[in-house]
Length: 246
Image (cartoon, rainbow, N blue to C red):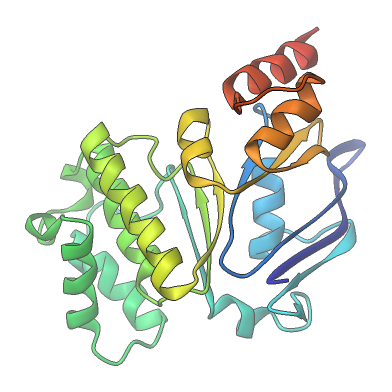
């Protein structure tokens, strides 16, 4: 397994954000991490990235303990979020050059040009990030995420601000990377139709715990407790969210 999450718990004082979560992801899988707001998705991702440490449990990536091999593991993975993290005064190219330098890429300009072309934002390279739309900034973030040819990608709402055409492009690139390079992707989104399209397997969280784990149709049947012939993750999401609000 490429990722192994073993009985991971995270507490903030008396509040338990992630409660004894265990799941694994095989190399080359695209797995959706789903759940209503506050279910523990972001906290789980932050622990996989090493931004925060688990209160209990262990994260293993590439067969190695994250705690013991943090730097080596991080060199082989990447992350992007719809929130964005680039300095607004720098241009898209300047921001990407900072990351290309951090990643130690040998031919940085060529790699940046390749990524800008891949996500069809070449014309934005000399624009300050402050002048980009949310959708344009998202595609520049994705350029950053792919620059080190990661074996593992953590994508948090990667199409949240994109129009349908740009979203189609991004999804096509992700599927192409999975097919050609065996890229493993952990994917969070509130677009359930998109998750059904992209993800072979779902890990569904509620109140910090895994309540279902399987294919979209398996998760649909597990949570709705019905035998359906087609997945309906939107119905599943609404069912769980209403239960949490009750």
